[in-house]
Length: 312
Image (tube, rainbow, N blue to C red; front, side, top):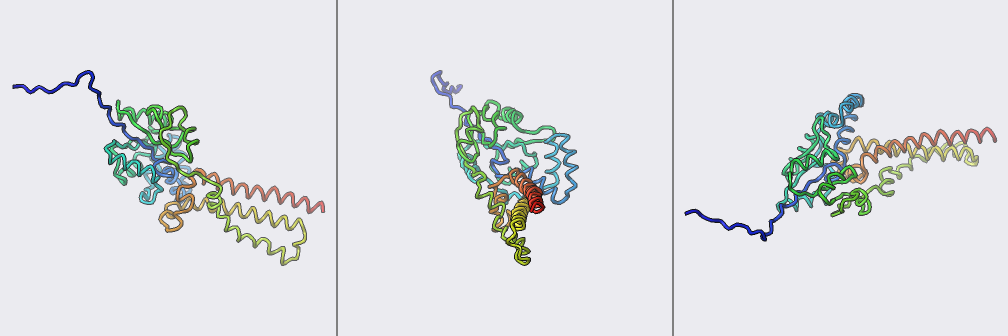
């Protein structure tokens, strides 16, 4: 006798498949850019590798990422993971959702992070010739999930095509206003607040307290008894300021080159760059700007001092 199974009537609601959860890596799951970290490690060990990297870049960003990743392992246990995002992923994984890592980072880096965390059902990442960013990432997610709806956690305007495909945006940003701006026209569903760079954090990165060493520039004024000459006092003040700016720029550059070592240190891991409170891009720009400002100020203002001295 053939067993008959009940058939669903036209009125029986069809349960929608659970939404997969897709997350970006750089500046989202981790508060850093893995490629830039690896590039800095390469340049620290072999400064002349910059020329090889430029050749690799000429072949495409994905090729350069693969080239750098092949020579630079990451200290996975010390990366500045975004705890709010990671806790959310683990909670949703326990609830039975499919968790996918989708990143423009090199496939080797992405897979290594995925293996370390052990929570991902699939990994989508860049390979030589295919930089998985923006529309390319959206297409890869669509191909992988087929008709399965998904949520996506990202951090930049480059993620808008993925948020548009998802229909709503989960954004990592300093505040809700920034998150809305990054999401564009897509409905903002959730914000993972990641504190941005503040003046206080920037001053901490500059280590302004160490400018105290520069008071030595005033010693010649005292020893020569010329502290009552405005031009000389002004020149000493300019020297104090310019030395401080150049020193701060140098501190930042050293921190960029020592990220892995600082993160493994009990106290240095709290420095703005090591902790992720200052991004690598911000650190590089600040370092160049501070050194340039220090040298430029010395050139311009000491020229003014020289002219004043001649006129007097």
